[in-house]
Image (cartoon, rainbow, N blue to C red; front, side, top):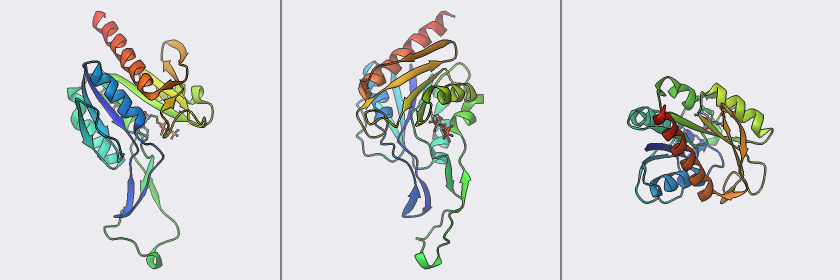
Length: 215
Ligand code: CTP
């Protein structure tokens, strides 16, 4: 398969030195990319700003903002069979990005924001027969929210995780996730390394793609 993966946070600049972002380190997405390449798939990884080495045999495209990530995806999606969106895309960006560093004296005390595009929603019309996988990092009721997003974004698989747990979610090497699909009961996985979660996702993609091929 030709698998496109996004990873890491996005950064939304308000001037050349300041930005809004989030706690994502890219570990989960890089693990999916490594597992997919090790399984012999052709892998393109679109990475937000992260401090991780590119896994072997993976083509990497670096981006900064949500709009950059969307543009890269629109360019690359047609040549791929599956999309795995692990990226923690910033939902908002500063309304104005200043080209020179803001001085504290001239700075307004209120930062005006505008919404970023929802990348998965924007790509939905281009989905065709491709498999789309999303990630839902939740601190409330992970399953209910993840199921809602699975349907709203028209996904084949939503990987839900509760990021309020210390051994799951951001910046750690383990994750506790549940696979949610449109037509089967949720499948909770035990506490696994992110490498193992990556391999589970790749196995799920392979099984689905074989099922699709058989019709
Ligand atoms: N996502 C996206 N575009 C955005 C925000 C999120 O494509 N602007 C993707 C993420 O990469 C992830 C999925 O949507 O695969 C769910 O992301 P999440 O942040 O959990 O959901 P949101 O739709 O942003 O909802 P909320 O922030 O209100 O929980």
